Length: 428
Ligand code: CMC
Image (cartoon, rainbow, N blue to C red; front, side, top):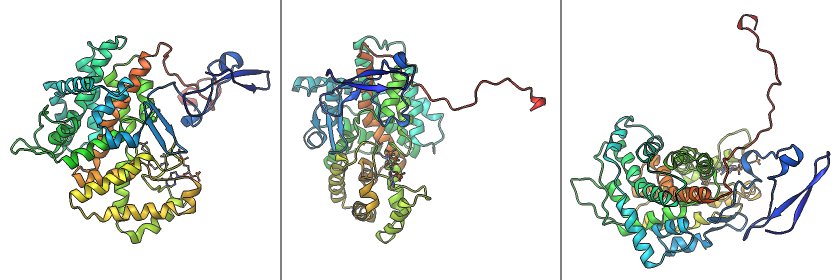
């Protein structure tokens, strides 16, 4: 908080608007009293200049390519931590002690099974349904199982709901996959790590023993860390907005999943791999780069550009390294990887991309890794949702725990018809 203020002259007089400072990052102009004082709203579709809340969870400096969770750089977390520890950090604000960590991991593993009745929900979907559609439906359905026990004003009940959600989402995601390929669902194995258990539920079958490959497990865990939270992005804002009305938390997460599905957001990893396949060979890259630059062509380079990062996305750097490790481990010679590297090189040296500050984002390389591990493209966004559930829950919890929290209710600039009289259908 500072004593600085910004003067606003509306033509009908002026007012001073307080300027608030965060720990780091740009100051913000506090416009909360603007409407009451001037009768005017601010107009900012897409929220390009609007902070929707105060938060202590994640900080991004898009110009410097910095991403911090509770102050810790993403590169350090990806290198030294693991997904369960990052989940604890996001939820609680501090890294856990050994005991806290063990208790948390144990608690999560105690909640990994889903209610047996939930299994029947899957049967209502077509086998070829997109797994994100299945995720929206099944996660939303969790609210029918846990509604009565979720008093969101009680921090302890919120903690239980959070643990349930984080524990069950890998089971639900793996079941979405199993349903699509017609294989039996696998029960969780609580002797395995969070990520190892997810791999077993996805790729294991009851007829054979499944041995988790530590390199794949580590890569997958890293992918989860890189997707765990990203401050007030579209899906997180959706979860906060849905939750601001006091709605059931599982229903709010289902709303976040719906938002994440779009190709401009979490759906970009699927779209990026499809695009690389479509390009097919390094000799076709120039043609696609030209299309991406053509204003009359809607084609965009998927996995490029970001609303906040105007420098290299720090997650993309870790992702590129992980892609190398996984392809080496699996001994995969994927021509798509050559296309990706060459496309990145060409785009980063092209004036259009330089001027617009378009760099690879987290989704550019993730699809290559997930494809090599054996996930179908339709599962990519599901994996993003699995990891981001931790961030959504942490952000939802922070919002509900904030005593100044209000229902989110944006205003609008109305440009439709003025008041007019109804005309009977015979006279139109
Ligand atoms: N390829 C070609 N041109 C692009 C691209 C791209 N990928 N991204 C932005 N531009 C151009 C755009 O045409 C516009 O040009 P002009 O100013 O001449 O009209 C300019 O750059 C600014 O773009 P914008 O759409 O106004 O920027 P935004 O901040 O609203 O959009 C974005 C950000 C991520 C939606 C966009 O860059 C995009 O569509 N990228 C491809 C999809 C993608 O990879 N999304 C994943 C984001 S990271 C993971 C996540 O958040 O889920």
